[in-house]
Image 1 (cartoon, rainbow, N blue to C red):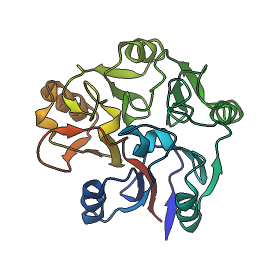
Image 2 (cartoon, rainbow, N blue to C red):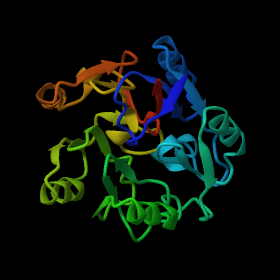
Image 3 (cartoon, helix red, strand yellow):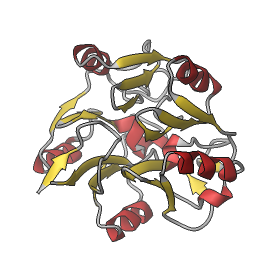
Image 4 (tube, rainbow, N blue to C red):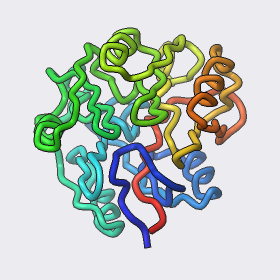
Length: 249
């Protein structure tokens, strides 16, 4: 038996299921670790390569509650099979910003980091009802830009997020852009190549030593007793993140 993770993006033991984009190499890597995957299909509403990014198509709000982009009907069935109650976001997600980011919010523990002017009303309503601390940032791609370490620590490559975290007593390590590949773009994002797969294990899709700031990233993780795990050799690739969903009961 498996339990939905109570605090989104913060598994308290080994993850047994995760939501990912349609990246076969990532699926194989996670399956080898004993983690089942729910694959979100490429959305015709979004451009390549972000059309298959989990952080653009899905937002776990904690427990059984999942928000999905409207084309994710097949994934919705899988979520139901795993004990979730998925809902489709009211927004018609479209190609151009800010219509592409209604689900791109970093929800972790009792925190919500998002551009509240563009994120979906369902996420904001959930945050208000459940007394989450809403941290406003200018960056619309908030989840892409946040690598969650624990409820009070993150890694980010966005300076506005770094400043907002500092103001809210969240320890935020700021790292440089440019070490993560995103096809068709100058660079990818730190949150888009990573995700916690255990309380003390942070997975990266690529070799963390290939990041310009790898030394300080590993030092920061060590401070919080979190071990980095590289899921593949070679450069880090932005795949829209790894979203842990369940842990062993």
